[in-house]
Image 1 (cartoon, helix red, strand yellow):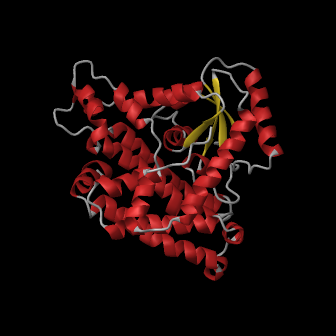
Image 2 (tube, one colour):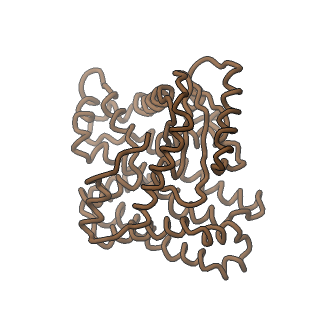
Image 3 (cartoon, rainbow, N blue to C red):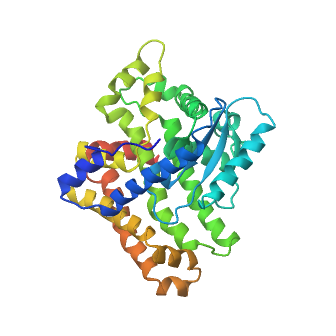
Length: 357
C-alpha cells in the first residue's frame, strides 16, 4: 500500500530549486510510508467490495510524526447488515492491539459510516458538521487500507455531485471553469472548524487547546489552501485542459474533471503552485521552511507533550513549544497570503473573484 519513494515530485523540485533542506518533511514522508505498510499488513486480507477501512489526517497527508493519532472509519457503500458492527469492533481491536493512537472523542471517526448521507446530504439541515467533515476529508486527506472499491466509488460519486449540480460550471458562457459548489463547501468546512475550535475551547475546558490551535494554524489551514488551489488549478493547470473542454462540449462530461480532482496533493500542490505560477522565493520559503519546522515540533515528544498539557494562559506564556508554534505560524500565514493575493496575478484574481465573494 505504501507509495514508492517520491522522485522528482514538485516538493523535491522546489526544495532543490530553493536550496532548502526540509528534513522534517522528508522524515515525515518516510515515517508515513512505514505506517502505511503497517496498516496494509493489518488489513490486507479484507476483501469486502461494499466496505473500505479509511484513515485520515497525517497518514493520508504523508506527515506522520511521533504520537500521531489515527482517525478512521469503516465506510459502507451497500446494504446495511449486522456483520458491519462486528467488522467495526474488529477494526478497533486490531488497531488497539498495535498501540495505534485512537481517534478523539468527537464521534466523527472510529465508527462505521454509510455512504448515503455523505453523497446526498450536501447542504441543508441534514448535512451535520460530522457529515461535512467526513465528506471533505474523504476528498482532501484520506487513504483506503485493504480493499478500496467502496472508497473509490464513494469519492467519485461525491465529486460527481459537486460537478453535475454546479450549473455555473457546466453552462457558463465564459472561459473560466472553477468548481464553485465544491470550493464553497471547502470554504464552509474551513470556517466551521475555526468556529468549532472556540466551541471546544469552552466545552472541553481548554483540553489540548494549544495542540489544537497549532494544528488549526498549520495543518488544517494547509489542507484548506490545498483544496482551494486544486479548484483554481481546474482552470490554470495545462493537464486539466481536456477536462475543461469536455465541460464545454455537448453532453457536459464531468468524468475527466472528476478524475483530475480525485488526486490528493496537500503540500505537493502548494509546491506545484510555487513552481508553475509567478511566486516569489520568499513566499515559498515562508510556507515550506516553516511547515518543516512545524512538523519538527510535532515530532519532538517533549514539545508535543508540552503542547498537549498546556491549558492556561500561564502555561502558554511559559511554553517554549508554544512560542515556537507562534514563530512558525505567522510567516506560514503570511506566505499563504502572498501566494493567493500578492505574487501571482492569476491566483489573485481567482481568489478575489471566487475565494472571497
